[in-house]
Image (cartoon, rainbow, N blue to C red; front, top):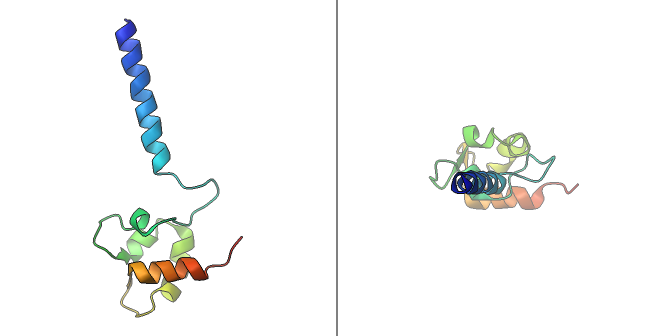
Length: 86
């Protein structure tokens, strides 16, 4: 019985720790890293991927400097650097 309780407790801790690594700061919908948005890991951020983050979605067109419909890592970094601070 003790082993079952210990196993269940460890499983809960592991799931909570994993979920916390995917979260953003409270009240923020602005991604903190390129990798966080590039869900298919193709090295580009599509409009669909950006749509998961309203702050990035709002500035997507302006961030897409070459107009190819995707954001490169450099375009993403420039958009983060030029966004207004709160």
